[in-house]
Length: 190
Image (cartoon, rainbow, N blue to C red; front, side):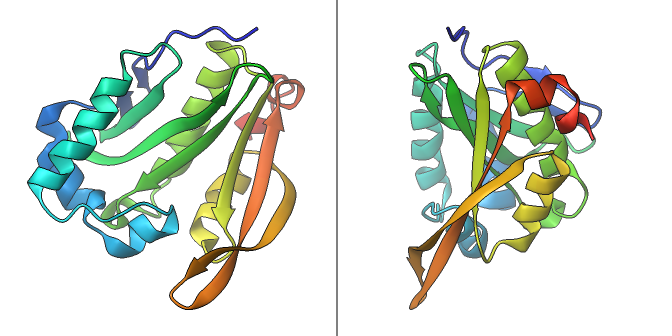
């Protein structure tokens, strides 16, 4: 049985994963939500201005009222800004699994932040939520995201071919997962 306690703050070496706040709006806009390429990589719309970001944050913040809602602002300790987000956007209480999504702003990529945040959220899922399985997916064209997924110890499960239609082309969707037994044996810590 899953234990739902909602989005609690998680701290890593370089990051604080916490609930979104209205005051995050400027850094959310600047660092990731207005980036068309980044938003397309995880099938989200572009938020072009503070008003649009305020609406997004209002939806995120309203979700915190539910105990089975898990969405974190990724705050880089050094600059204090929101550099991205990570969530269990799909939580299946009946079957004891959840699926992660994340994004990190382009200026903060290739520094290990996505890997660090993902490992922390994997641990949260198994240790705090009592998940049996954590899953994640990425578009076949998103090579950097696949590298993050592999560094976190996920096992490749398969590809849904021609799943997305982007810019006049079909793109596949890779699926990966970690089981509780694999997490407990240390695979995710590698």
